[in-house]
Each structure stands twice: as structure tokens, then as C-alpha cells.
Image (cartoon, rainbow, N blue to C red; front, side, top):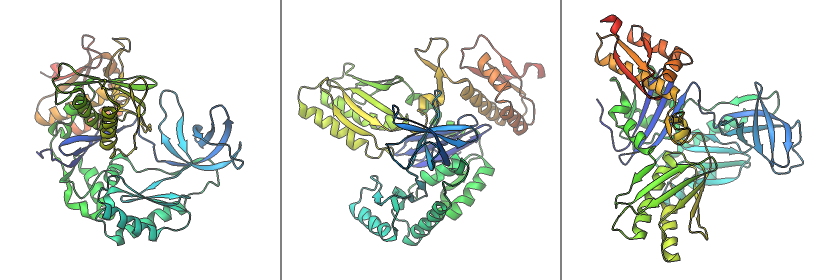
Length: 465
């Protein structure tokens, strides 16, 4: 069994679900998840056609094919009108009845570089702290750039041989050349699946291990790395035992991250309360003997970890402990800004309002961790959350696969709350069938009304005893 490294990447595949966890400095820093219901479409490029322009909304509705429509913010432009064809890229997935959020700026991501067709200049990742390395990369890529190209140099470009950067730039150019707004609306470039996106966007030479718990996926990853990132070939490992996320302590850490209250090292406490329009965060002294400024500085550091990990987007309002001077408030705002500098979505600290609240804005990109793993609770009328029935159903499938591997001669069943049982026998039936093929026997599903709505149990199949 592989032990959790201080810097590593875990990729777990199970019937109906793919999960990715990035560990940095011993802590969970990124969690991604796709299932058959909610696969991320951010980054997909479509050929679209404007069906309507809404001046009040400041944007346009765009037909992207297959009967689907997205929305794009467009300032008044004479070149755009109803019926205009254009290329668009998905910026936000559709949820809560909203349409896909689209943008006109196309970004074609590679491992070390991102090409922006029609852009200009070279941006270097803020995570590259070494000024000399930043300058050298900007000069190198600036020398490669052609008119009508914008480039973003990603963090992993540091130490990448110039010849490989040039080859990647040519690959991205060829992809850009294939994009055209002419023709019927439809998909023209899809982002790779979650595993390959993780290898492209998260893997780096500093990693001790990249661990995948599926043999077929490991082979596919090995082929991808051999072509795209050969320096990482010796970091790839296949995990043969059950429960990679459990072995690495990721499941437990995710549960802790989703808690409403988060203790701080000096005794203070953070409380996080998402609402439909903003996320409210309160800092409580909780009897700590530390100074107000010290508690607030600890809160700023912890929030810089939690906001990206929970993928909190939109407006964030933080009620720090009230300090006496504007100098103290400026120090806390500066600490929060510095701690958020590595956030890939570039959260912006707006500062303190006249009411003493600190405002932060962060672009929305994909579902928050709460929305990905939880659903409004029918028991508490929406005042709290329980695990989503589909997510719990997939967890039950993983759990029975692991239990069967540990007890190969025992026939097992899943006893589950009715909502989870219905999900397993309904939309998750194909995933359950795949699990039965892996185990080599049928998996009985027993609805158990006495269980809480998000609970299930794995136990022996009484009919087989």
C-alpha cells in the first residue's frame, strides 16, 4: 500500500465516477470529480450562432448545436447581431436551471503553455516566484510569438527544455488553425477527460508519486505521459488495493473541509455559510488569548486554502474580528492577498468596506465542493446538507467493491436509505452492473427506511447464509 506523499496526485476510477486529489505540502489542495451526470464541460470550444441579443442582460443567447443554448456577455459590437456565427468557449457549466456560460476569448491549454488565438503578449504564471526564471520564460516565449497570438506560461514551464516548449507551441498552433466559425453550430474541440486534464494541469516534476487505481487507466496515462510529459514517467504508479482515497486519508479530509466551522491554530474559529448570492464568512475569537490581529491573520491564511479547495466563487464577505486601526485592517488585507496569490482563478481582495467587512471576488468555475458532493436536506428543510443520493450511491458501490476484495468468499449486499436504493436500481444501474462484473456475483440492494437519507450499510447477504 502506497503511503500518502507530501506532494502527489491521486486519481481514482470506479464505476460511474472519476476523482482526482492533489496533495501539496502534505495537505489536500485540489479536488476534482466527474460522473456520468455532471462531467465538466469547461474549456470545450463550440461553433455557435447568436439567436437573440438582450440589451438588459448585456449579452446574447448562442445556439451551440444539439438543441442547446448558452449565454455570452457581449458589449455592443456592430459586428455581432442575431444570426452571427462565432467561436465560443465554455466558461461555466450549467446548473440551477441556468444555461452554459460562454466567452469569446478562446484559451487552448497545453501542459506548459496556453495559446490565446487573437490575443497579444505573454503572461507568466504568478506561481513562478523566481524573477530570473520569469524573465527568461517571457523572453523565450515572446520570441516564439507571432502576430495575433497571446500566450500564458504555466508553472510547469520552469525547467522544461526550450525545444519541448517550442514543440508544444507548434502543437497548439495546429489546434488553433483547425478552429473555424463557419458551418453549423456544434462542438469543435473538446477538453480531455478528467484524468488527462489532471495529468496536463496538475502533474509536475516536483511530485513524488502519481497514483492511479485502475489498470486500464494507468496504461492510458502511461501512453499520454510518454508523449506529452516524459519527465513524469517514473512517477506513475498503479494502485492495486481497494480504497486509494481512504488509504491517503482524502475522504476524511474532504469531510473536514466541508464542515461549517474550522478551528484556527491559536484558538479562533471560522464559520462558512454559503448563500445563493454570496458566501458569508465569520471569524470568532472563541475565547482565544491571542490578539485580534493575530487571529485575523491566521484566518486569512486558512481562508486562502479553503476558498480554492471548496471552489467558492462570486462574492465572498468576511467578517473579521473588529480591529481598532486602519493599519491593522490593511495588514490583514495584504496577508489575505499574498496568501491567495497562487489561486489559479485569481481571487481579488477588494478590501474593507465602511461597515468593516472584507470583500473578495472570485470567478465562478464549475460547481463548488458543496454543490458537487451535497444536496439540500429534505429532513431539515434546507437549513443544512446531507450527502447527495447519487454521490452516496457511488460511494456504496466503491465500498462493496472494497469489502468484496477484503472478503472474497463472502456474499455481500447494500442496505441503503430509500433514495439511495432507488438511485442504485435506477440511474446507477449500469454502474452497479459493472461492479457486479468486477466482483463476480450479484449485489442485492435492500431499501432500509430506518436509515437516515444519506446512509447505507454493507453487510452479508442473509439469503446466501
